Image 1 (cartoon, rainbow, N blue to C red):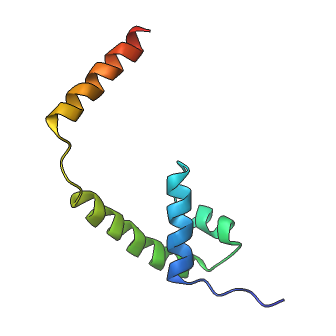
Image 2 (image 1 turned 120 degrees about the horizontal axis):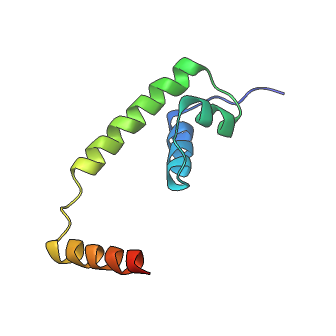
Length: 81
């Protein structure tokens, strides 16, 4: 059986899935999830994915102060329980 070609799209979707499930999208984790891929190919695509995450995080709007206050209030209530 022929091995599948590792594409940027495949690495991106796998990294997104790992991240959404609270797992670190490392090279080894991505390789395990997709069933292969060379270290250098996965690393190249994963580096691009990480850079895009940094840009996306930097462009996210600031949290409104009212939301932060409610978050602190909720945290205190949970901690008190």
